[in-house]
Length: 221
Image (cartoon, rainbow, N blue to C red; front, side, top):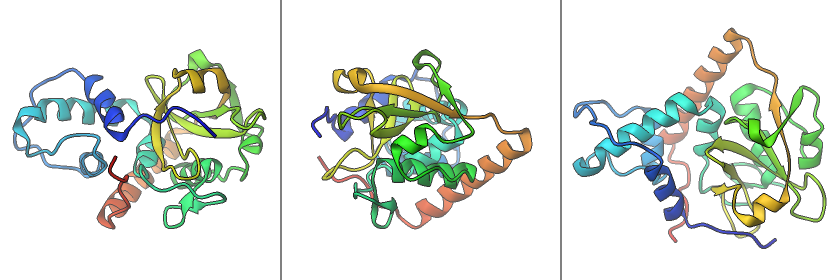
């Protein structure tokens, strides 16, 4: 399919300019989330003193406003697209990616196809104006409703595995291609407090393990 393809640099610029600069603690330890964002090129190196304030604000924004599912999904930025793919070793297609993230972060096994995910039991229909990080977003990319799926991450952006030759990346739903093809969104029923805490612990553990094992980075543009 033909679509808008913002560069990895453009995504990073958006993420950085979305933040308000504040002073960062000079001796703040680098945690798993900070390391993840740095490894994926979404924040500058912590050693760059001139941009450290921006980094601190962005890391806080990710930690405080994004769902644990979104943090988990971002860990797979740069994993190549593969038709029928279900894992980071072989690659993902769009629904294989969302299925993997939901199972990894929530323990919820979604159907394999994008259109079946849209009608899966336990998922609520969500209006576009009510989107929250972690919601599934669906698009008509093959002249068929619900033929493509990604995960909303906030500020009009979503993360997905786009097409052959591409890789997991962040794109803007407000771009003309995606805006005109948006067909709906779904959200998992809110978990209990215990389930939420368990999901958060599992997501952090997965991030720590994955970053330690050096998951693939996006190819240089």
